[in-house]
Image (cartoon, rainbow, N blue to C red; front, side, top):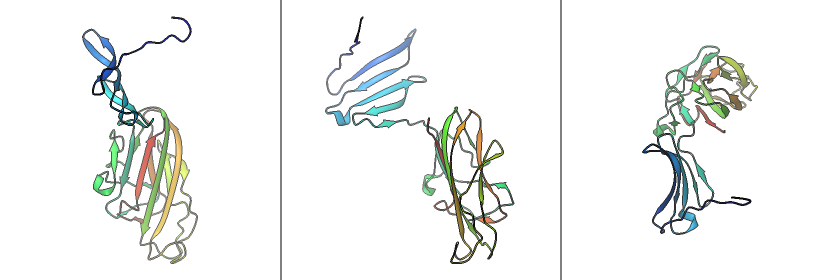
Length: 212
């Protein structure tokens, strides 16, 4: 009681954990575990919620890890023709194509990322088009849509000119945006032009994550 009051949890030996548990009846619903290892570099504080599962950890160096933080990287593995103002469906999140889909909030069948919780999210996309004809208008080749409405442009504004704005019929564009989303909002990447998107996940991708 009083100013600077404290609750102390006595740590065991260097191979033992110390726990502060939140219990309902006989069931531990969550808590905090101090994983006390020898030396600050290897110790860790784990925060347990949702069926007493660790969802956030802080190690002795102050590095925070959140294994269920919504994030994804999807790529395009097969060259695909797009119509004007159509959704680009990035069809793979396989690790062999440098992909991941933590929480499964991105759909490889619809091309949508759906926000699981309200918060600020960061998104970026890069797309390489192939077989583009000389002097084709490729300005603002990509749009980012939220809930079917335009929210952001890609950054390049140019016609395709061989060996000037691209080469061998290839033209690349990219975008980046941070958005404050409500739970259930969905994000898609739109091709403004009727062109063919290049099937290589190193070039053609869509990625994002929850900032907080």
